[in-house]
Image (cartoon, rainbow, N blue to C red; front, side, top):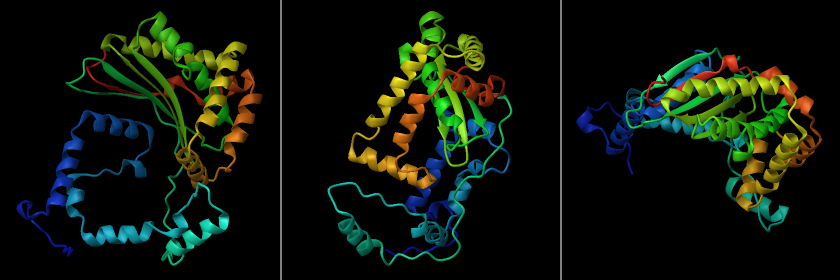
Length: 310
């Protein structure tokens, strides 16, 4: 296969390049993509790497040499982690790895691949119209000034399971769906990595209930900051989290994926066992203090996809 690079008109563009440009152009117009970009812009500061965007123009400007240089610069052994799972001995594994990867060498300076820390976001609200939707999908998100290595990560996760980790048995589902009837679905999430962490709550509802649900969610979060969760809630949340730990390593793929993820950001390989001990010994005071320290409902970015909220 011979690949040549030269400036071409639209009618001369190779089919693969033309398809990539057309797919990119279509994606930029989709409500899903616009929603995702609105959330990123609301959470990170100007100039952040996450704000880089693929456009038809950037796709069209790419040359084969650009792809080749990027590959040579970033696909390298000093950025690679290999996890081997199965009925093999360490010597057998080493023999296979050295056979296929032993001659692989890195050249040039190691590129920076870890996102820099960012400050907390400012509150904002964006509506992304979606003509195909009759209800709204709402995401409330906050960029936290912490990372995966913060001791408060575990307390926030435990509190999340009081709020929404057990579906019908937790506060958000019970109060906003079962009792108030404001939402069709509601979930909360804490995503934390090597340098950043994002807390979010997403729900689906009729346009008339967007603000009503938001008020109730703010109240639920402020209650987490001011009052200890009940002993029954704490026990239930611990049971949910502790059950998830062995389930998360119930297959070879899951075990390998977990080890790979921990190795990539520098967590100890036995992190699940350490986490289980932390969750088991955690107190209601620690949960309340973590929410009071990190979660601020007034700082949420609110992204609504669908009809304009009423």
